[in-house]
Every structure is written in structure tokens, then in C-alpha cells.
Image 1: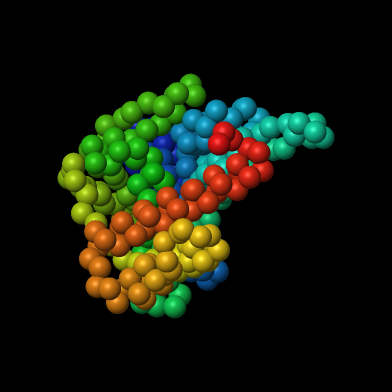
Image 2: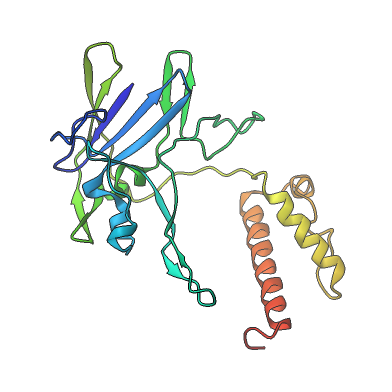
Length: 257
């Protein structure tokens, strides 16, 4: 199955052609239920990598049909000072979409997942940025033009769906602008190592708060703290870890006392 997303003017035909063909799709998703894989592509002409200050040779070339895998730059190319070895640019292949569950109650839960396959139903959960929206609250996309970011107002997003049955379906994604985002909070699984590190440090250093204050996430729940207090606990833990890191750097003679 192939899906095309028309966000800004210009674009390509759906992926799969032998050569670049003019169309209206700026982003595309291909799903292969048989192999349980899904891939997200971007028109190479508006690839966000073009805004990362990379040398032209470091930006992967689009395929013959004009499409590029969506990537996230994690490191620019550089020369190692001691060996003079050239280290290439590094990327995360975020276009290789991750399949999994979004239900925190399930053992297979992973909030990094971006698609699901349930029988004949395919569900996508794509970040706004992967569709080029720099500010979805004001319905503004950002595209590269001569290496510079250019804001483009977006009314809606056109979607074409090709299920491989000989026809296509078209629809529009519409949403209202906003200036306040609703949200919910939950205690994430990764908070336990954070509290464990805080407790271990408190025990090893005189004068630090006692572990009983916030020592275990189950203790946080037992105290009946509301979300505001839990947020303060998290902020405290982050600040404490930052101080610990600074202390270690100073002990090694790095940074001012």
C-alpha cells in the first residue's frame, strides 16, 4: 500500500516509478503487510537534511524517482584532531517506521512506534515534523529553498491512498489552529533508574537529602502526590544529576570551581 501527502506546492508521483515524475506528493508512506514493514519518504527537493548545514556531498542522493528516505542528522562530518581521520555525517533512519503498541498497559508498549497493523487496518502515528510542519499550531510548514528555511502556510493536507487494488482514494486532513495544547501525564518507566541514581548518590555523600524523601517511584505514588508535585520531583532529580556531573568534571580539573 502507498500513501501520498500533499503539504506544499510541487511534489512527485507516488513512489515506485523508474524515473522522477511530476506530481503533488511531498511525503509518502509505503506499507508492506507481508513483511510487516513501513517506510516514510520525502521529496528529495525538500529534504530537511538540506537545512542541517551539511556539505552537499554528505546529503544522500534521492532515488531515481526523486524520493529520499526520511533521516535525522545526528552528527555532521568532521576531522578527528589526533588521527586526522575524516568521520562522515551520521543519521538516524527515522523513515524506517517502527511498528508496535501505544498502550502503556501492555508489555510491548513503546511510545517511539509510528504504525500498527491490526488485521486489515493500518494505523499511522506520524509526528508533525515528518510531514514538514514546523508549527502545526499556526498551520505553517517549513521547506528548504537554496539552503534556507522558508515558511509556507498550509490550509490542509491532501492524502492519496493506493491499496494496490487498481484504484486510489483521496481525502483531506484538516485541523484548527491552536494556541494551547492539551496534555496528559504519566510516570514513565525510565524514571526508576533516575531515582535509583539519586538514592545511590544521596547515600554516598554526607549532607545530601535522605533517600526516603523520593527514593522510589512507588513511594511517590504512596505519598499521593498530585501531578504538580511529581513534576517537582522530576525537576529536582534532573537538577541533582546535573550537579553531580558538574562535581565530577570539577574533580577532573574541567570547568571553574
